[in-house]
Length: 133
Ligand code: ZN
Image 1: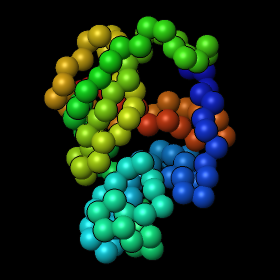
Image 2 (image 1 turned 60 degrees about the vertical axis):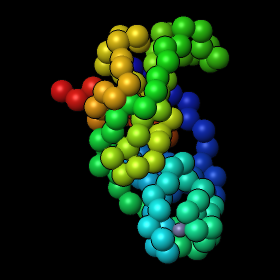
Image 3 (image 1 turned 45 degrees about the vertical axis):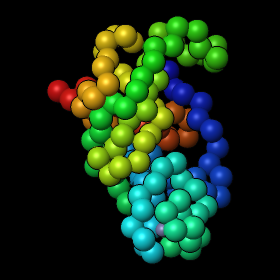
């Protein structure tokens, strides 16, 4: 499989991207109020604290919240068709991701999925989801 070009991490996302080298999917957790959120932000969406946020490993289990098949990619290097989805992690947050391992149209809302990875630049990887075996 060809390597994806991934966005550079910034101050907020650098640790998140670094964890993908070890194929770990992190979510932010607030030590003040317990909110778990994704994608990484500078402040907690639950209580607004900026200094209470830490990381925890997501279990890698989720459920398809919505999905769509893409036949015309905005990126010339992407192979079509592919499936874009919102997956609700077992931990609560929604991840905007791709679904793999089935035909692009062969999905349904509520499908149980598990984490997989597409290899990307600099050893990092993009978290995607596939149907539970
Ligand atoms: Zn909070």
